Length: 121
Image: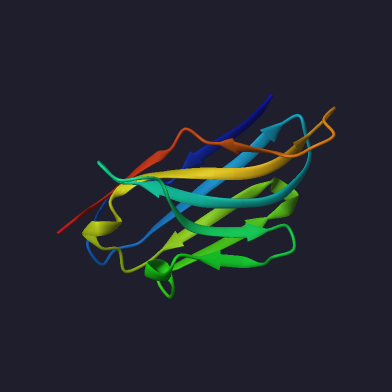
């Protein structure tokens, strides 16, 4: 079993900051990449940011300059620092990891349960 557990979501006023964390645990051989996606009501799930094991990052354009993704490989944990939050950032934020599980010859994607971020005006 591989689990991803997110934390750090909550309610914040516009202009505020939050830091999300996601820890992967379980029968993990290696993790190729981790990232964050978000889904607002009535919308599809969209990329926020990803980071590879080697530290290569990718951001959606709307998050560039406001959000920062980082990773602690020793803890199998990814973080998302969110600054200058806007009401349109309100969504459920999901952690994603591409994992090679123990006993498996290939990688697969795992998802966390999601954490709610609400930005008030």
